[in-house]
Length: 122
Image (cartoon, rainbow, N blue to C red):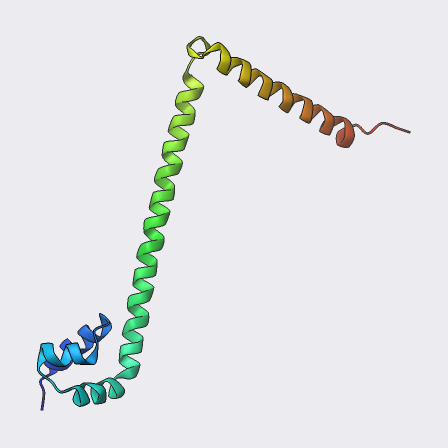
């Protein structure tokens, strides 16, 4: 009869994805015995795998959420810095480009205003 520690070690190694051959060599239990243990505790292994996968997925989600929050903070900080700068630091070329962009946007908004907010009577 094998100890509870040996069986627990088997489960731990199996959850890590090790093959029966490798586990047999590592803990000194025959492959047929390991297969029998696996069949007996299949539901337990599945439950532990599901729990491990859920925990991993939650950790990844949290990591992504933290990274997104960090990026959002950095982007806001850079935008605030850009807004706080005076235009005299900006090159003429950049100012002209910015002006052109603003003028086009203004024209687009005026067209929308005329067509949707104040439709002409025909």
